[in-house]
Image (cartoon, rainbow, N blue to C red):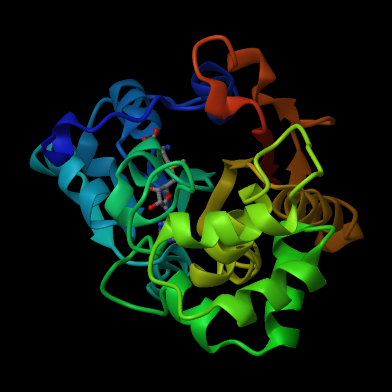
Length: 294
Ligand SMILES: C[S@@+](CC[C@H](N)C(=O)[O-])C[C@H]1O[C@@H](n2cnc3c(N)ncnc32)[C@H](O)[C@@H]1O
């Protein structure tokens, strides 16, 4: 079995992110989704001292993988990024660069026992932080039909949300990923699409389990405060709902007249499709960035 340091995640849109963050010697960096340190490692190289970096993740394996950067002086915090942002803001901290690289890491998807993947059998968990919160199985087994429909529709954009919710209710209790994937597959029997029938259901449950949209919404509001004048923020999203939230927030901040705090650096989002050759998981990524107005 791999140790956390041996688990691999290829950073998405690395070069383009660095071009937008423009790290310079002696600057400070807050990485709210540090993962396996791919982006963080390159930024730290450029700023020249790991002591100027604060790295946040809620996943135990990611925190272990960040140990080498911690040993070099980086401040590593295991918590959800909305709580980290609120605490750092409360302490009056501010940074020259902030990065949010949303979504899941490759090891989260690849390790069957984390329960994120319908391609491998494992416990139906999906929690990024396995010490807190409800698992995907608990949601499937306890939610009302209406709650399931709402989760599937809103977070998964599942066109057959009603049918999938009914099938979940009829077949519970659930404990494994393949059990759920098979039930959703039966709803789709005879209808063949480009993606696996369980893709949207798994995405919806993952977003619900980890409260991903709420985390992003709460954190966006704090970003202008957490940036120093001329500070840059880059956000990589993998879901249209997240990208829309980021786009709207940057636009509102830029168009706030004399109260405007951010200026958009990316008129159009940069698509991860350009990284696709090396990393198929980059395909759905969208990168947006903004700079804090002095
Ligand atoms: C796409 S990976 C980041 C990869 C990283 N940029 C790298 O180059 O290795 C996303 C990471 O964000 C973490 N994450 C996602 N949502 C989080 C949240 N709300 N709070 C803290 N960490 C979160 C996940 O655990 C995962 O490790």
